[in-house]
Image (cartoon, rainbow, N blue to C red):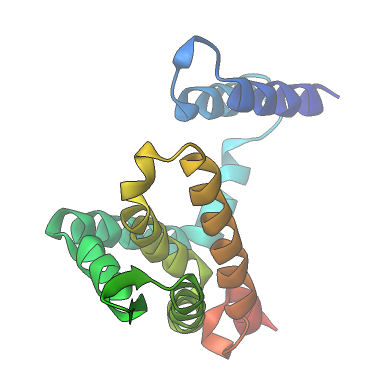
Length: 174
């Protein structure tokens, strides 16, 4: 019962975020209380860490790679290329075709998640989508539009990571 209370309290604090503290503060507090009340032993934590250290290290490497690509301007470059391929010309006007944009993004995300798995694909596609929609800050519903695109493409990342055996850890295990 105590474990459930600590879990629920941590979850509520993570969503509520009182005092504008970062998320890691509340998750660290939850982990601290679990260890203080001896609900989880250090041997258990070591056992779990020994099982997942390689995938955790891979995820940290992907995050570092994503930050490096962001610093190099790679995501802005890819976003400009996506917009370039999505444009259409009609009676001396150049505009972005939303159908072309969405189709290109769907195909891009599918192949990205098939070869990089869903975690890597989401770490790569999220900054690209943010770069694509960074000009919408003056739009009234820019947060809703950005969230809609991010959610739909993250669901596609998860679904299309089942395309190949190497795409998803579940595929490798089974």
